[in-house]
Image (cartoon, rainbow, N blue to C red):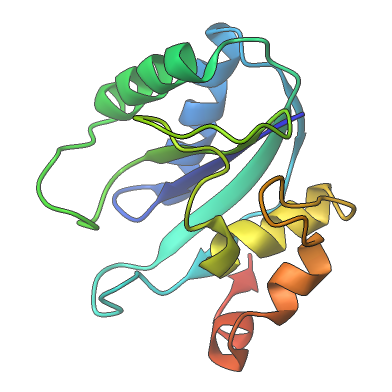
Length: 158
């Protein structure tokens, strides 16, 4: 399975996520399951607009390299501007995990910060409660319980 994170903190955040899902689908990324919407403070600067995030499950056979091209095109199409690291954005699409593979280089899979992000782990647990991190072999529950109490309590589904 392939797990993909989608987030937005500018404009109509839910609409941006739904459009991203549509564009993924028409580009060959079949969506098998989607989490609910989760809202979190912006990181690392909580004074920026709040994010809404989801995680989707796909059985796509598109390579990670081609997925990256597709996702960047979708982000651009939805109005994402490259300003500076962690700046607010209309759309952000990340590969969280790709068929239990560990890949390093330009594309890093699993996503190197996934185990520190409540907005990835909690929606991922919702759609894949038996997920095991391909690199650390920790199950999703252990990953969630390694988060700080603040990270666990600052996320809410909407």
